[in-house]
Length: 209
Image 1: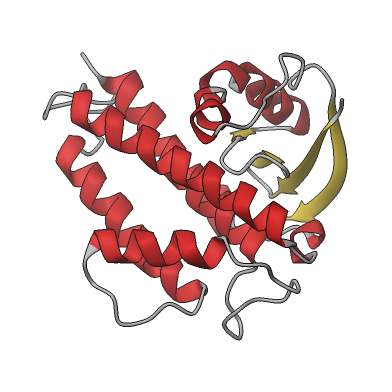
Image 2 (image 1 turned 60 degrees about the horizontal axis):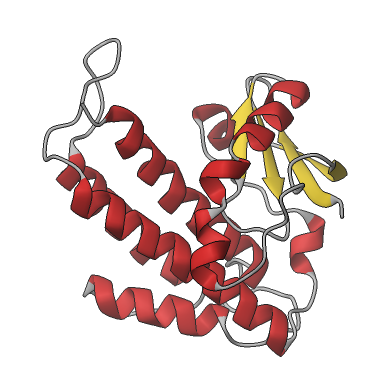
């Protein structure tokens, strides 16, 4: 089976995202580097579908098929995927919504486990930069609150309430357009949120002394 991939291309960076696997998303300086990084991270991503009870084929990384290219922007250059693919505006039926929500929930659980098992102080970057564990956890929670608003979820402050509301929103079928005006579609919200969770989970793992 092929893995459908969209490429988000800006002047400095290319993000490769597996459209059917929220959070399996990596970047590089070129299309080739981004696709290579995506393939390299298949093994690190595999625990997510396993936690969700969804089969992730052993050959998922061997046949990456680029189905769409989008123009990135300054946020892409900075280091975050920021442009929805056209395919992410498609309708989401009940079965797909349940699958999407399960994968995002599994990514969140993996992040929680990584935080719980990491030391408070993480190894710094080559120039001494980088947040420590607790600041990363706060940053991820703050980002989730911002993402919630993109799904039309307002007025919630407690991280657990935000999390539950997001997962419930993702689990509902959708006709495709964003739920909140200029907000995000279900498919793009899942990809962006799961990417953020896993990117920081893997950062913590990589920076653990």
